[in-house]
Image (cartoon, rainbow, N blue to C red; front, side, top):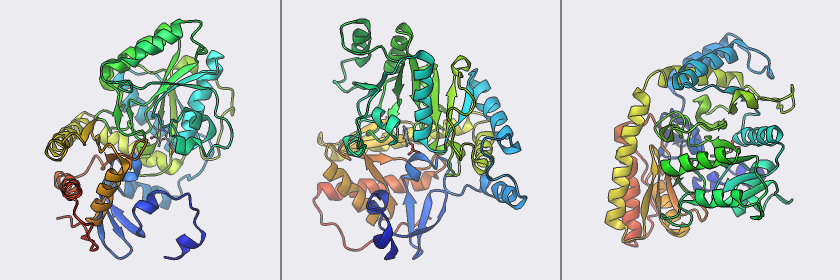
Length: 430
Ligand SMILES: *Cc1c(COP(=O)(O)O)cnc(C)c1O
């Protein structure tokens, strides 16, 4: 379709990797306007953990619209919002003995991060926020200051301030615990690092290249925060909602963040919704101080409640995700060992996995070849050097296997330096 070239901005990115016009989608499958089938290993960059157009949510959502349910209500109390809050409190918070206040922000992840950083700054009276190398927290100015990627940062147009960058787990090699460095500079009044309001961290860095913080490192990070009376913000926008095998990505570490951000898969249906969870004593907002026309997307409340009630009422879904995650990591390890020769390495936790190809050219060639075989899969990382496996958590075992087979075949072709075929072989789900 010519219209995209004619008037859509150059800022497009995913559209460049997958230059088709998409029209229908279901579960882990997508179809273009010619009816060709694709297997989706991108899942809205982690927004579609429960798949596209999940049947469990679709009929109730349609019924809600049919019944003239509230679609937009600013932040007014609605039945849909109340029922979502109740389901979240019962199935997620209370079930984990967690006590948090929920704030609805504008419906994007970056807006939740902005709110989280404001809370930390306003409550502590400190400006500085510690962020980590390769962290990604969104692209509005406050969040962008916390984001590492220079491609995004360079577009700011103004100086990005109020943050201080520290090395993430593994940044200085496997043997160095970078929280010791953080502890050291915070203990030294001459380190030149202003006493921070908070630390903001992803437990697994998604956009940064599937960098996994160890459980030990996360525990140590919390201990350093407690020691220096700094708030701990976990940005669980991509790693949360089940991606790593538990609802929150930090559950395995047994830590208790002061503030948590959630978005992406929270609504369950790809509808925009973002929230901040904060310890009750941090809720010092004055009415309307942080607002947003679309805070509290009522259609998203319907599907978000159903997602929580259906998938998180017991451990079954989490266990299934862990099982599939183990399958993915076993397969990736095998692929890396077979074709790696030290060039590839596998990484990840749960169904948040990747293959580090060291350079972006090779990773890009792998994903381009995969797309020619009907697989939608992207790269991430500083140099787009990590092939990122982000399929829907509800994917069938069969399609999970087929998708990984396609990546394996693509890697084999790249290693054998085969020409990229002209012909496209579309995916066929059985
Ligand atoms: C995607 C993402 C964001 C930003 O969310 P948007 O909805 O794109 O603003 C923030 N933090 C993390 C960890 C993310 O993955």
